[in-house]
Amino acid sequence: MKAAQRKKKPESYQKRTYRVRLDSGGLISTLVRVQETDLQILASCDVTDRARELILEARLQLEDYIVKHPLFSATLDPWPMDLLAPPLVRQLMVAGAQAGVGPMAAVAGAIAEAVGRGLLADGEPEVMVENGGDIYLARQKSCDVAIFAGRSSLSNKVGLRIAASQMPLGICTSSGTVGHSLSLGEADSVTVLAKSTALADAVATRLGNEVKAVAGGKSSVARALEQARSISGILGVVVICGETMGAIGEVELIAIGS
Image (tube, rainbow, N blue to C red; front, side, top):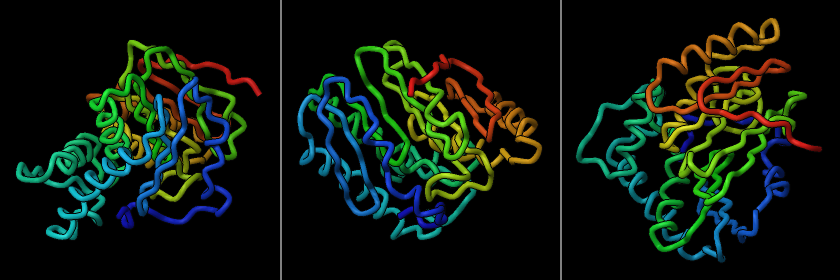
């Protein structure tokens, strides 16, 4: 479903081994897979059946639209707003337009949020939905989130403290060295915080395209952060390229213990 936004990365990064290091905080972890959609969900109980329904509802909106508009899944440019499109598809259009990327760059975040909001509407008091490193987070207490940055020495040693007052929140990460999603840059990680998880996902892709590893990546990290200042709707950004890290906005950086 996201073929035009994907390219293969080394096989060692295809397995989602970071999930076993996740602190569930007393919640129950559920894994739900529907075709390309592969979610880890934290909730008060096993939500497999309901989560699968929500995933199918979200995917149906998108897949039906792509049947009618095949270029939607292939373009790397913003898609003109279509007020007759289903709600999830309109979210992708808005996020892509704000970030200056194709709408499918926002699909993982949009599906994560659709599932999370659906579970909250069903009465779940707290949820976390992770979709390939893109997270919809709605907890009643502060949470610490480690940043996985591939081969950088900062990987899993730096994280974010998310206050309860910031949630619900989207936390999305793009990488030019990790995972299978298409990135035109060389950042080890670009992590974006926004109220809209779709927007956070799209902006992470956009900013990741700006980062090159030349000379340690310092100038391109600064350029990506400057770009971030011009995009409305995002709350904070953390960029890691090799040993260089930069951050702006409402982010509380923390050291992660070994």
